[in-house]
Image (cartoon, rainbow, N blue to C red; front, side, top):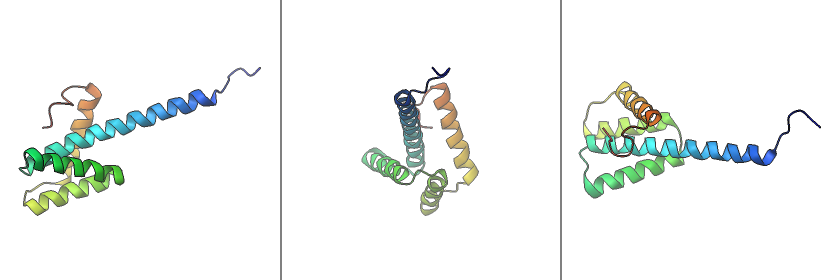
Length: 110
């Protein structure tokens, strides 16, 4: 009998759990970022909800942080709001840090 047994089903189960957790973390991060962008763009109510929904779906279709940053920069540029890539990256890292600490994630999208 081998010293270590490799249970394929438990490995696959753990892998699926990790992938699911990553998916939900990224989805929450994208939602918080989308709310922040929409607020900066002056969207409220249904307009904000529509922007957030479209943003999240776009991020799901192409899960790439670079694409997300480019989209945010383009949205701010169209609106005539000055914003730098470093400002956006700081916001993303701030949200990710709050996610690690689990403080204010669900209700505070500043």
